[in-house]
Each structure stands twice: as structure tokens, then as C-alpha cells.
Length: 57
Image (cartoon, rainbow, N blue to C red; front, side, top):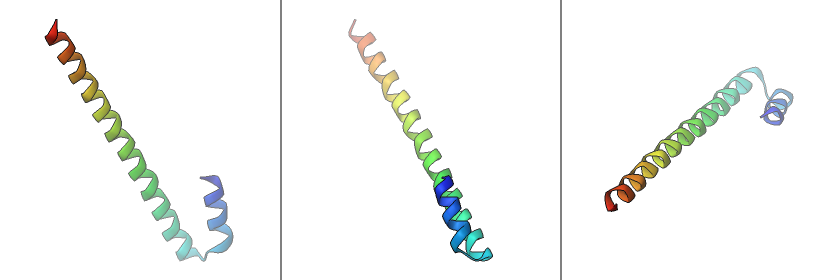
């Protein structure tokens, strides 16, 4: 992330820099949302597997 920020500061005008930061922040937020969703889905599937194993016993 630091490399991206450094490149943005060196090469872009103020408005462009602002837009680039907004895009970067959106990408980071989207990645965090996706990671959270995948973690929740993984937990859900794990619970289902455990319930299926317990049902067999």
C-alpha cells in the first residue's frame, strides 16, 4: 500500500490524487468485505459439516 501511495503522490495532480485515493480505498474496502464474506461462508460450511457428522452418530 505504501508503494501505491508514494507513486500516486509523485505523479498526479491534486484532483487526480484525490480520485486515486478514493479508488484505492474502495478497492481495500471491497477486498475486506470479500474476505469477511468468505470467512463467514467458511464458518457456515464448517458448522454444516459438523452437524452432518453429529447426525450420523
